[in-house]
Length: 166
Image 1: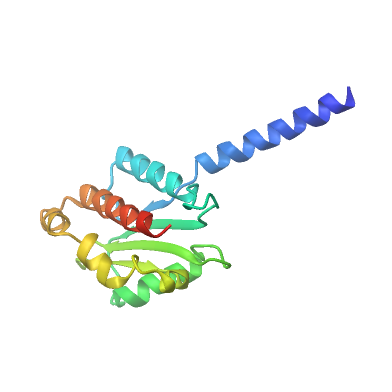
Image 2 (image 1 turned 180 degrees about the vertical axis):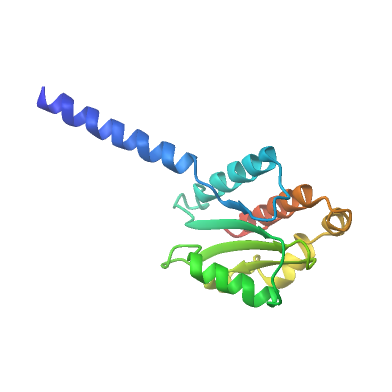
């Protein structure tokens, strides 16, 4: 009887951890430019990314977050993104494969901030992000205030770029 109780406790604990991880929220939409469906789609994509594995079968240790804000309030986008990235500690300290996408709606600025772990990557670089993630299609969506679709496309493009590296 005691073994059954212990087994049941372990199963409940494992199930709880799975549920908690499945409901992780990777999107903070302070600017309120995303629909609930878009937030859910983004969270689903980023949850899949967070639980993905490398080609060698190891856990990739990736962390990707999205933040929308109305304004940077005079701050530089690079400084703002780096400060949020470091304050929120996106990415584990051992691998530091964090990614933060910040978009400031009123300032018409956006940035992908990378953790230091990407420094060794030959695929996930500032130049490749500019070429493959910030496409003309994305620029067109942003110019027509279609922020939700633009953020989804940026996220899909960035995940594809990350997929070449892990």
